[in-house]
Length: 526
Image 1: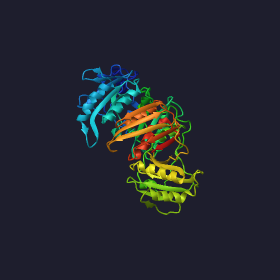
Image 2: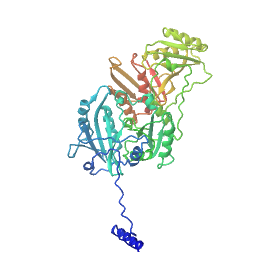
Image 3: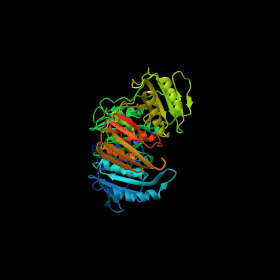
Image 4: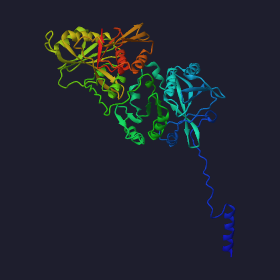
């Protein structure tokens, strides 16, 4: 009887809770995240933000992804922008968005940047939040990134959607404010060694590793696992990714990259704004062109600070229009020359154990004569190969004087040591003396300067056929790169003239900026 009563009471209790044979109501506990969310609900009308759920999930698992920014909308020195499809930019005034455009945004951001500028960090502490529709233009985001770079605003935060809790989280985008003082776009070698670049060609992603090697996805979908493995195996492990998309793209590829690379532990995500000024070549070669590395066994680079040449090689590896770096033949008779920032020469000739110092160009000429062999006037030039390491701060006159000395003794072959930031990697640029006069149809770059190199006022004049393009001011190199990127080339020969006391580095910076002219030969003009 007691057992029967217990069963009866148990049945009644179950019935009161919904019945012993009825399933319990499925009400999952609300999702609670430790990650910061941004209160933007009243700002999202008409917006579909890029989804970053997978990226934030892995960040919460502490895989190495960056964490979202914790920000309050009423905090001082904060500007909030909305971007809709069609490149429409509007700014939040506290109650609603009002149309502004990129110029209006810059006008609002500049005084904030100046008021919060930190001289020690060389950057401002103010911030720009961008709430962008996933179908909005990629070029608009690049314009905002570039505005932050030029105004030295280090905080650019992109609104993203997290399905877990249906919240908005702010993704910090990498703003490299050091580029504002660089001509073109250059990374320090230690930074380049930890940076990968993700580039899309016809919807297919290509990953460029820090050593310049290209990794290609097998298809347009599901490519992240293989790329993540490539990134994880690199030494040192890259933590920064640059996203290089055509300016005509939307933010969809960004959303896709956040999903596919969510497990790659990339803490810094940088929209690659230089494509605004120098559009990428449309199709890298099916087989990556191999760039020869110079084996600096005799320590040439240790005696000087070689000039940097990176953008030129990036174009060369993507297009067969540009010559590759040269590799000296093992059997060639070589004379190694170095010239430091104070125009002091040294040489290492065959049979010498140590470097010899030279007082002037006359002594360098004697070394050339001693190793060139007998060269009759009008006969075939000497087979001697000159390898030159010139300090990036050495005056341009040094190279012109060497050119003149080589011409006098019948030596033409000259390879110059440059530093590719990828790696970093030493490479050799062929600057051999020409065998003929300058062709009449050669493109010419004439660089003028008023004042000293440190703070000079530059004017660059580029002549191609019957056209002339002028670039002035501190960003003349960027203006040249933008001009040639719009289809000014190709050219067979590019001749460059610099002031005699101009640092040698300027020549190689010009070669970088003008790489998309695809010159097959570079010529020096006295």
